[in-house]
Amino acid sequence: MSLLQSLLDAYSHAVLTLDRQGIITHINQRAKQRFGLFNRSPHPHGAGRLEVGDVVILADTAIGADDGGLTPEDLACIGIQERRLRTGDRIVAVGQYQTPGSRAVYKFLPSRDADRLQLQTTFRSRSITVTIENKSASVLVDGVPYTIDYFLSIGQMVILDGATLEVKFWEEKGYSARKESIRNLLQGAPYMAKETGYEICVEGYHFQDFFEGALFEAHLAQVLAGQAERYVDTAYEVNGYELIASILPVAGEEGPEGVIVKFRNVEDLWDAILERNNVIRSAEEKYRQGEEGALAPALGGGEGSASVRRYAYKLSQLDCNILITGESGTGKSFLARTICQLQPRKGPVVTVDCSTIAPTLFESEMFGYVGGAFTGANPKGKAGFFESADGGTIFLDEIGEIPLNIQAKLLHVIQNKEVCRVGSTQPIPVDVRILAATNRSLREEVAAGRFRQDLYYRLSGFSLELPPLRDCQEDVCFLINDLMEKIVEKYRAPRKQLSGEAFSRLMSYRWPGNIRELENVLERAVALSESDIIYPEHIHLESEPEGGTWKELLKREEARLLRQTLAQCGGSRSKAMKQLGMSKTVFYGKLKEHQIE
Image: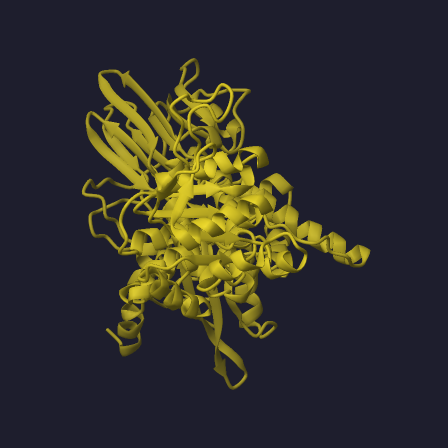
């Protein structure tokens, strides 16, 4: 083995090298695994092709995707002539090849409507089960499994000899490179023999003998001819796989001597997303190790809110009243609840939303009333919020909404640590810590005569002002992780991850609605996404209408339509391309133009 081959095999990405004529000179083990260039199945079979009377067993997750471009009409050769069948449908079927009068057994559903599809039947004493479930297409013949896992789509086919009913062929990953897709075989193409561990030799052959993809082939030709400098991290569909590839020239005296092609499978993006999230979690754990780190879920774990976290933690350990201010949606209520959890003081915690209490009921709700104070009221009277919080904490949310006459009584409670119920002159001692929050400027309210100055000074001795999210942009990544966990638990939704472009959109947005807006956007994205990954098309942000020329407006609308169609197709470029009626060259050119990953 050459030094170059050893280096390539040690590389984590799939890599192959071509000479100036497009002949494959080297390919590493990672690439062979990606493209299925060696056999892993323990069941060998010989070479051959479909013969009249052979039994064909299919499990296709999306007709027309990763099956050689199969069409519903192609299935007539195994006895399926179903007018309702459409490209993109999921199908499981058993039928005889080119056998007049035979009827296939099959089930089909639109892919978006089918998480699971199964067919069980018996053919001349052979028990057959065909299942699509959990990203796997599986065929059982008398209990023997023939299974292929997939990421976006797959076309699995098992063939039984028409005379002996012995298994004579089954699909295995790499069928596109071997020209053994479902459509190819149904149209009479031969298949290769399989032996466990057998490796297909591709070195010395032209790359088009094993790898196909219109845009990929065009870009390779351009780089080899010196017409393009290089292509880096470009989206391609090669042999039915959705790939991210870089095509890099090998410089020579008279132009490129060849190229190096580096592939990343779309499945690797999931690993990259998990790696990114693990890094964020690791950094978050680092912040949480400090005393103030317990406040990271409420404020984020970035440096922008670090000083607020430190101060909030110190105040939580003191038995003092705290005024929390900040714009709407900055997490004031969440911070108050977190302080209650961290503080040494035990006892009940009573939360009062001052904006929801009718002005005529404020006094009785806050301080209670004695029997007979109100017509029709409880004759025994009722304790107010402050009595209920005795020995613990009361959180007065939106304290700026309290009427002036009640503000005076609240000041009395703070100064004297006692309340008087409505209809009574008997003071009742209370030991209560007060946390208060408002999105108003109480200084301005005092100046306008809507808030008592003496009460303001009593409350603001220890105050915390929460910064808007736009001033702490690095906090967004920490908050995303915490909120996604919260959403999954709240709605019992499947766990989902953000794609790189979706994550970037969230990180670059200004968040006028702060944390509350971020949470709403994430909740909607989780609901809209039908796959395990949230794409930018699922991220709906409030923004000002954009102006521009007619050409600029059309360009933005084109990008929006591309993203929307990709979202509707679950991220499948091949489906989106067909739905839009675009050629591969035009479609991928548009993706590159609009920088859509």
